Image (cartoon, rainbow, N blue to C red; front, side, top):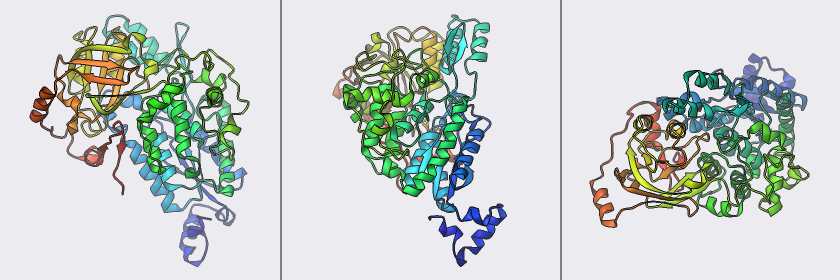
Length: 556
């Protein structure tokens, strides 16, 4: 066993003395040592229940003959970090999580790992670590929150942000906002729509790294505890069969994930995370292929914020396997891919029936014949940009209007809430990218302000930052190259005409080549917004990739 390096032989006597200090018995030291990566904390609603999940995993591991040993991983609540300097720290934690988990797993020579994540950057960070370390690994998330209910209608966190915009526009009273405030997030768990956390937990299941129900069983259901016990037991099967992450995380598995991303209408952040995870698994995944996959993949789900169904509804409809079985009626999945169940994708989804065609549309009655995400290119995004097509109003699929240019999120929000943005405008927020932010903040506050002001069907927003999975409307993010490295978004001036054609996958601004060259000659790099601390170090290392502003730390 891998753990023999710390438990067997005379040279390991000092190591065993330290295991004795932990209270481990000789019998426990003779079993496989299973590291359980606990993302439990008391600040993130999606993580406050993970102590229960971890305890269930420990029981499962012990029942199956392993020795469970818990160590932590950090996690940020993107909702609480939104709208202030904290959002600059959200995406960068993905790399901190991957690095620190890799360090713990290698330093202590675990035989296998059980990852217990839930919210936004925590899931991809641990998937990246799993691919790097490449020892038997299984995931079990904390599960989604139940939807809130206001005035008899289901609601969620995105409704809360939009309520703030509606209040600013005079369309909602303080009492009505407080009602949303008290009811939008009624339980623990990852926020209840198809936002980034749930997108990544669902795609973990699609990739084959989690058991059935990993992405959809609500956090408060006892079924989630049973799932955790089964994950603890199944990791021992993976140890016995020596099934490792890179046996599962193949090119075909990632193509399956992109296909299901389109069918489910996942967060645009998946376009950042999937290539980064693939990179760690030794797979080159260019997001340009997203449009090719989208063209042949119908969008079957419109979960919040795109529609009025929620994760609990998807779970009752049959979950991810039911969507996979439905989409594969067109033969779009690689069913031979191996998974942590020890079976193939095809074996896993066989017989998984769509129980609610209102939540999971049938292949013959999709929301659209093309997928939920599109990658746009043009002279405003030479290396790509990303839009959640399934959450865009039909009248905004093609839009042309004057640029209203802002060099930070805060200035844009003031203008939107101050009534200075009008129908037809295109709001451009730049210097919010991975280097320019630094940290590539999410622009949920500006998009929510636009929706709250009643401009969601007439105003577009473009940024070199990111959009939250909770964003909706004509919100185009991840524009690359970013402004901070001289991308053309830095050269847009107030009043320039922006042309958006989502169906044609194009994003341009009207400018002659001569004028573009004049502006480029005058452009000067800006001084960094932070000069010390982790953000400064991160900004100095990170590169804006040609694959749509995917973040990569250069190889060690």
